[in-house]
Length: 213
Image (cartoon, rainbow, N blue to C red; front, side):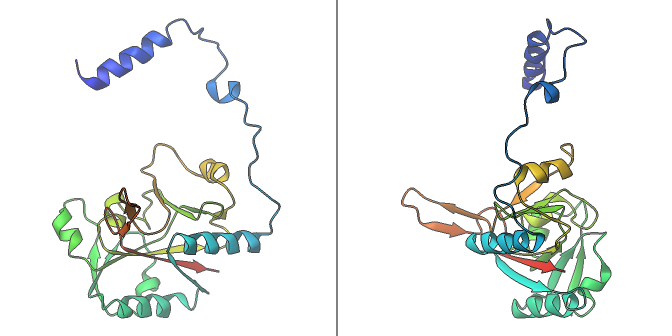
């Protein structure tokens, strides 16, 4: 018997005496907690997102839709990036002015191949202002989870204000639990027992978030 079968067996035994018409779990548990803290305008919520992203050491840029392609080109040039990983559904215009080799998001790519890519650019599913968190759900403009975890430089585009919510409960209402969710709060980092911070351990060392609106 596998571990999976053992766990599922315990779940079935625990639910054996539950009547078929019992109230569903999501209706039994009260959801009367605050959906957000404070009363903010959409603009203030975006400002809070920018503040918390910066607090996590992400680099935040604001631009309009027309300013996005030249900004992306400048960011890649500043990194001397020769290649960029591109999800299949990413808007082609975002890279229109960038002189880099575009690398496709392929299922057969090895970790070594991904590690040789200089940068990756993705969209996002939602951004959470109160926690400074960007959430990717594997959509066509975000690609496979691993492409945002291996390359050292991640550019993430957030459309404001429509993709920005105040709180985690509001974000969960927009997300599908069955999708491969990646929650990103700043660049990858860890601390040892002496609290020395090390960045880039299990993900990009540099996260640049572009708030486009």
